[in-house]
Length: 253
Image (cartoon, rainbow, N blue to C red; front, side, top):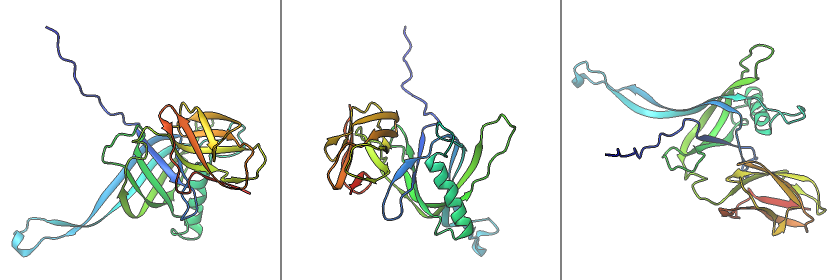
């Protein structure tokens, strides 16, 4: 008699995506943290002794709050020419210096994490944070450059809907987010579920050319445009990204 196949599929550890908001508040421009080797998402309860005389010496605690942080090892990445750091890695390095030299408030930024495949696992979260540590691991001359990053939460951690649960592609940021009316110039289109893109549009005008780098980045050549704010959308077999908000606005002047 044939045995019944198991319906269980084990979840992979390397399924967490972390996005960093690189915009100046209240604007939002989430970009993915790439090059992750290890990731720990830590939420800890803060407790105080709550033992009373009537407990007859049995220890009791009460929860008075919580803290959260992200501990990650990242491969420090550069562009193909080796002339510039990955923009998110550079952003985090600069924010560490800001928190160290000015204040933690000045060094704050938005961060979120979620299952990169859109799974609703109850662990999609978002909050404000600062870079508490950005030390290189060191190593030999032939070793990869690795940083042990600590992102410390500031204030509440809020549950959010998984941003990639829907099959539609998402545009979460542009760099640069402004330009002139003439055709030409490269625009990084950041987001999620961008793989397999069949079109990139600036306010209804198709990009002159575009290259899908990975599921979270497309490099598009800006078409000729009229002045004003243009919604940048991406079309994939899953549909066309929605408009609204400012994350996908390209300002033409």
